[in-house]
Length: 385
Image 1 (cartoon, rainbow, N blue to C red):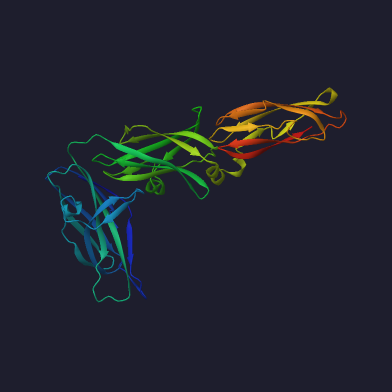
Image 2 (tube, rainbow, N blue to C red):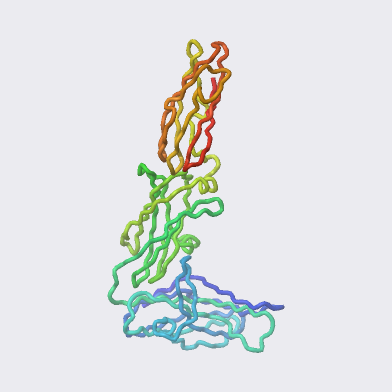
């Protein structure tokens, strides 16, 4: 028994020269799915319609799934493990007239040891004579033949590895490799969660093969023994920091082992992929300008909050009245004078100032020293009345 689907696969092979020659055909169906048992011979058929007159050649090719999820075509080997060797085409060569339809038939003989999912391609192309001159464009139409051989099913097994972040065209993707260790092909649903150090959900990403994305398929189809690349766009801007990525794969309606890996959003990745409106400095000062509360006798007090968006600890050293000279200030003090901020940590800081003259209170700016992995940076602390 078999099912027929509409799938359009066309391969183009060209040799450079002054003019073009090519036969034009229509082939249907483009995919045939069959179910069988060992030692059994199954029949199949498809139709070739001549849009122009020509000679047609049909041959069986092996197939292998590529990392993109697309199917690649391989010249058959002389081995029973080659599905192409199971195929016999009754009329592999024939002439066709314009507007003529020819029914192509054949058989596939299943070996006694076969068990699981197999696939091959029946290539339909124009037969070119040796005396053809000029540029020859050989258009090949691939009829995909999928056959599922009944037998003992292996347990649905898979592996997942190499989860990583990829920046491309100012967008951030998460990608990893999935391999089908079963003897049948199944549909794959893959979802990734990004969680911060407090286990808060930051983003959820669907991962699919390139083939599935291009075809707008909700699930990725993965064939036996194939390893495919899955990827998905991280749509939300994610701040600099360390995150836990949790990948959950459902393959053939069976949950696979959960995969966990640490992901680090570096300053470079963030600067390249985050929208400018969302970008923050390594150390964020809230508010951006501190408000001075003026008290009697030339005293002011202010509070601020520092937030560490860096994936590493940050050491902050505030200036003191003994380390800097001020023409307006008699004295000032930051509390605490020094502090260490862990990743994603925030701390409150207080600033008290005494002006030399009570009637000349102005906004005075300061600069704090930031130490990150033995590298010194500076944080400007701006004030307003």
